[in-house]
Amino acid sequence: MISKDEILQILSKDKLRNINLINFILDYGIEEIRKIGNTYLIKSTSDKQWIYFFYESEPNEQEFKNLITNLKDGDSHFAVLEDWMVDIIQSNCKVIWHLSGLQLYFPEEIQPKEVKHIIKDLSIKDAKYIFEHSDYKKYISLQYIEDRIKRGIALGLYDRGGLIAWILTHDDGAMGFLNVLPEFRRKGYGTEITSALINRIREKGGIPFVHVERDNVKPMNLALKMGFKVHRNVNWLRIQN
Image (cartoon, rainbow, N blue to C red):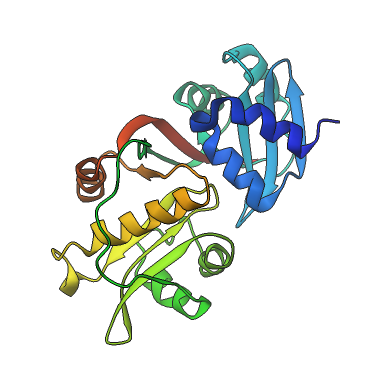
């Protein structure tokens, strides 16, 4: 049986393409590995039991189809799928929900904006407040936010003791949850706290990246203005199984 370290070594050959799965494995380990040819199915659990796929060299649609047709009971949540993978799954399974967006990364040669304010690590007591102000309650939970504050990088900007802006990393290392309270917007806080997270990710040897829905104009404009570059389309699915 191939080990976690061997999987990570394979994934690191194309670190940018596989960064989501690398980060996920580092935080949550591997519960199950299935392989057909050069195509792998990796399963582990954060807030949900997630399934990732990757291939060692070139994508092979037939190998992927064979893995999909042999899904087990409970194999229902899929993360960071490529578009062609979504097409195959949709032709074989009933999809309950589908979330898609663009993955953007922050190039190594670009330096983020200067951080002028004091940015602090978030604490577990901030989780409920963050959840209450989230637009993605359908996809996340309070427990997930608490877990990400414990395991990942979670930063906040406070004013007179109150939390006014925050940003965290997701279970795959993606930068997310960015929010600035309405009365504090247009002051550059979003850019500043994003820059602080970029610096922290780099200090840990990671690649700063973010997922943005195509029609989410403000986050997309912020990312592009800061210097993020579009990498690829990514998708998350839940199927009936």
